Length: 141
Image (cartoon, rainbow, N blue to C red):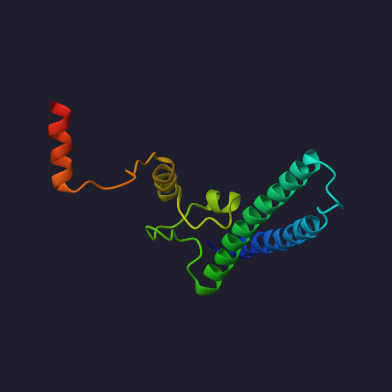
């Protein structure tokens, strides 16, 4: 990646940061304004709760995105921008043009998404070996 491309991507990141900060501030202002007065009935309560929950979720998502953008700007300062934080290979220019804050190459991102979306089953408790053998004997009866 040449200096011109890096400058363009840095500008995109700075613009994204400004936009995210502005949107987070607006959401926080909206959150303060959700209390419209006394709650008259359960419908008002549900509406206010739903509005607050939506605004908090949206704010949380924007804060996570802001963190990704700030991390990318830090990687530019450190000289590690454009390298995958998992495997160390160069991140494709097409990917960085589309998602300038991407910390992972396409391959590592795919592995991460598969790992994050794969169903996991954790038993609510662990049987000791003795309990496990006892349960197996009970099943065979």
